[in-house]
Image (cartoon, rainbow, N blue to C red):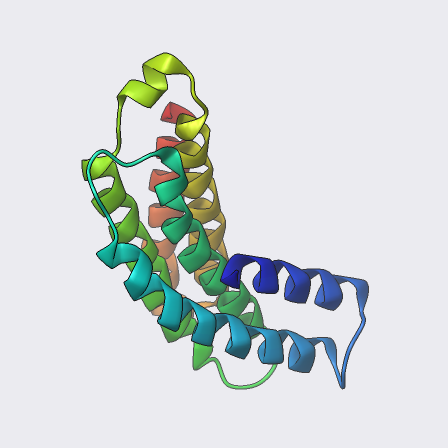
Length: 159
């Protein structure tokens, strides 16, 4: 649900539709998405069982989509306080990826049931999130984040 709200916010901001400004509209949607993410994610993580289907990677997708929108807003005019929040979400999303990977049913890769595509796709949005956070970050943090972006991109291409 948080991912859908972020998608709407990105589209509205991209088309120039605004409640007051595109950034204000996106910020309002970011607030709603962040609350939904914070409420729903613990419930989803508590329900984790082994082996997991590919759909379990949606916890990474939801986390990284909120990070992308936060980084986009942080890159705009005004204070860049959101860049740290986006960076923490980026790191949390990568941790969630590995938590799910440890419990992922690798038989889905051989069976071709489709779960493997979600696993690769969640890495792809992680690449976008890392690139957006790197673009929004200041010079001291930008270089390591750019290397992280390249590393995650290499993992996507390998998947």
